[in-house]
Image (tube, rainbow, N blue to C red; front, side):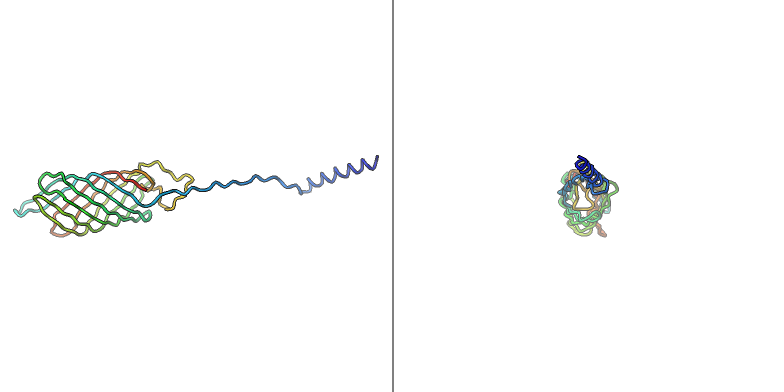
Length: 207
């Protein structure tokens, strides 16, 4: 009987020693990694708006000729990064007052940009354009054109847990969705040519 008690006591002592001696391995909860969703975005955008054009020239009679016309503008562009993009635009103003409507204006521009907030982007335009004016005043010229503008993001996208393929997405009208734009463009910067100024306002969609 003493031998049985001694054996049980020895087993209990060995068991206690095993736990107290640090041989016990704690249970570790498994780590579950949540995959990061890749955002489906690109630098491509489209824009459509209304335009107001002002024509200012010296007529053959020695006096000034001025006219306001109204029409529309189509913009197609691609933004390479946060600061540089390209844009092509087509413009026409068919609603005239005094006979100097802009029959067509085609241009390709370098578009430097800067996001001043998560929703607002300011930009410039500098490039080559061709402009044709018709009816009472007739003019067809091409050359340097430039402009400045502002874009405002209307989308409710947010970075969240998504991974964006472009580092500038989510700032200054760069998210997928709708936005607004307003800009000014001088259609032709050339000596001895009429001044043609256009202000446009409309919507954009970023893909």
